[in-house]
Image 1 (cartoon, rainbow, N blue to C red):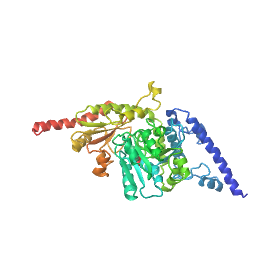
Image 2 (image 1 turned 180 degrees about the vertical axis):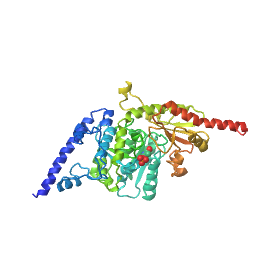
Image 3 (image 1 turned 135 degrees about the vertical axis):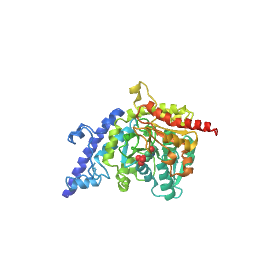
Image 4 (image 1 turned 30 degrees about the vertical axis):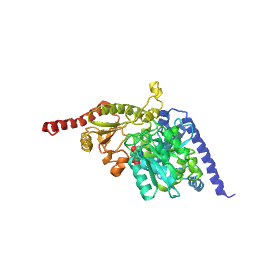
Length: 472
Ligand SMILES: *Cc1c(COP(=O)(O)O)cnc(C)c1O
């Protein structure tokens, strides 16, 4: 035996001990409540003592890791031991975030889950789906809800569809289970949903669609950005892979763009190598993610980690405010329609009421409570012109293409997030020109409603003028 392999073997053994210690930390945290996990993740006292005692996870801004010697380097770069090597591949701060996300998304799920953090939500959607499109064949298709984020629509329709020839089978009404089932065939690579969807707030029955996908041997991938794990955890309902834009409610401060893919171990698929089925997130992180390069900056990971600690409390209070705002809007003369999963008139409200619960809500309220998130959309009577008048009249609610914020923000999706899809694409995604999407922030709901009220009153003034002119 030469000296070198023995040296490498020593590092492999050290790596096994490190992995076992981390598995132990993870198993301890899995016994804790959601808030405790959100606050601590896997960063415990032992980890702190190895980091100069810092009680907060340190931000490792370094591009690369120094090795003790060539054996250590060889073991690390061959993935024979836990190491971070180079920040595009892995980074200790990003790792704290990934472990926290895996624990939060896996809360209440009786299997194992792993996570990979990405540079944006779109990078997450790409990394969650692209591995299933290997070895293209004639007839290769995907089945996806057309009620999805504008960027996802473009990725699927343009990048996968138009450029690569993947047949994109849009499910027009995600509540219609027959539509999902009818579109799946032997050439389908994955089934994709987003619930509640941005911006139409369409709801999908995750458990029912997961059953349809699994019956065909396919994975069900769910974008759960709008719900967050504080309200819905798709893995517990049967989904295989969850994607997030962590940019949104998870990083409510608005200080970072980021995303994540969280997958159960043992996903349903017959595509790719065994490792891909066994631990999809780890497979993606070690191979395709390394080669595509969509890693998140450690600074951004730290910003997200910091905001995650209060996720449940924010989703609780902002959801309550949004319910009040939705009820106010529903009763307003100038509003044609309100889309919010929490209101009775919303198609799919029954599905939302079954699946959207404040995690550990009984601890606060003595009984489980439904919470429906802080995104609401509404159509203004009088078409695009009236909607723009109301939008331009906001005095506190920011005009920006953003959501998930602690500050109230509104956009007109037809001219922003869904601008590139054309009339046909917008019609498909249910994005009419008079739709305003409102992210309800952490302000007092009375002040949010007051701003909406004064902006909507511009339409009263107009009708008075019209009436006085006699051309009503
Ligand atoms: C914003 C968003 C994305 C994309 O996330 P980025 O972080 O902006 O890349 C994906 N899905 C949903 C539902 C979103 O709201």
